[in-house]
Amino acid sequence: MDSVESAGGQLGAVLSAPRDGAAALGPGGPWLATSQAQARQVLTDPATFDFPGNVNRTGDLSGSRGETRSGHTVFDPVPPDQVARGVAVFDAEWAAALREHARSARDEPYDAMSLLRRPVARSTTAAVLPALDDARRDMVADHVLAWIDALGPVIAAHRRPRRWSRVRRAEHDTRVALEGVLDDALACLPGEDRTSQQVATMLAAGIQVPIAAGSFLLAWLAQHPAPATDPLHVVWETLRLTPPTWLTARVTTKPVELGGASIPAGRVVFVSPLLLGRLAELVPGAPDTLADFDPERWEDGTRRPGAWLPFGAGPHACPGRSLGLAVLVRLASWGADHEMTLSEDVRIDQSRGIYPVPCRFTATARSETSP
Ligand code: HEM
Image 1 (cartoon, rainbow, N blue to C red):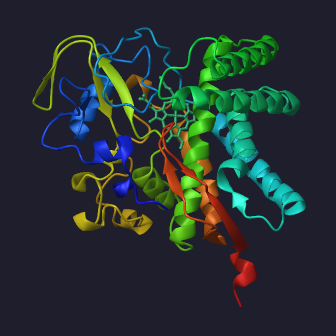
Image 2 (tube, rainbow, N blue to C red; image 1 turned 30 degrees about the vertical axis):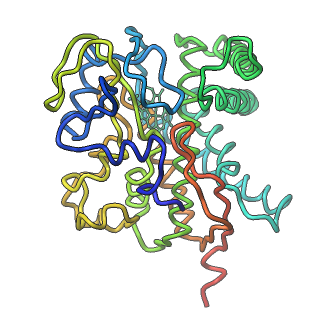
């Protein structure tokens, strides 16, 4: 896989920013939090650092002014019984996806991003809407995937696509179709008080990101087999080196001091779990090994995994943290039981969070290869 350290684009700009205070990435901003304390200040004080009204979807770090969108929904964490349901569905659907591959494409390598789509989509949908029957769950999951696919080109576009452009129409049509299916589904669920827009947002966030995280995990394991390592350590190490939500933005509502910098109102401030995950004070191991994939570093117990905030913090922290972690642990356990080989070099795409592409690999069960 590409070294994240050598990646150009916005990733390179963030990793090479000076770290002696909040860093201005251009004249007059945007700013970047470069310590955990700064990141916490930004993420836990929504009255000063509000959600952006128009998230910077262009990959362009030059914009320093932003609008806020106070009143953004706060999502409740997915409760433990619903997490358990999501994990059970993931297990069943992952096994089904592997069987289907064996049936229809046995001689082809697996493609991680494709292979994970249905298992993750159905698992997250089952956890977020546990009362749905399987047929409706699968229909909702397919509609979320269609919306995510249509959103991709809108987010990745360098210039905001015009309202009636083909990509905006496709995004609009798939979103309306999803909300229609959700309206019908929610109407059958007694006591349900979430709107179809809220549920659609939850599902999209809870499907797109774990697919990318799971693909990174498989790519790392293919390059650095860790059959005897605690799968949870493999998960944390993946989320440390390649957190899919590697950059998140807020907009200042008033003038504020952050890490020695005076930031005016209405300016964009970034928090990067990917940058924080490379700070020696947050990660065990020698400073010159921080860019290496080494899940066993978490065995020494001297640092708390997750201190680099791969699930965010504060009122907008990830409500699907437990589900995301649990599904990735299942995947890491599968990875530990298989010998995987990448079929070609993997690049890190930065157009929409980060994800590995192409991420194709072959896998053989270790029990088949052991004497
Ligand atoms: C490995 C898996 C996951 C990772 C790494 C992850 C990461 C994140 C991060 C960093 C944020 C905060 C973004 C910010 O502060 O701007 C976030 C927010 C969010 N996540 Fe996750 N997430 C994962 C899985 C999930 C799952 C499974 C769900 C749903 C079941 C979910 C639903 C959401 C939602 C709805 C938000 C927005 C919260 C808000 O704006 O208040 N995520 N996630």
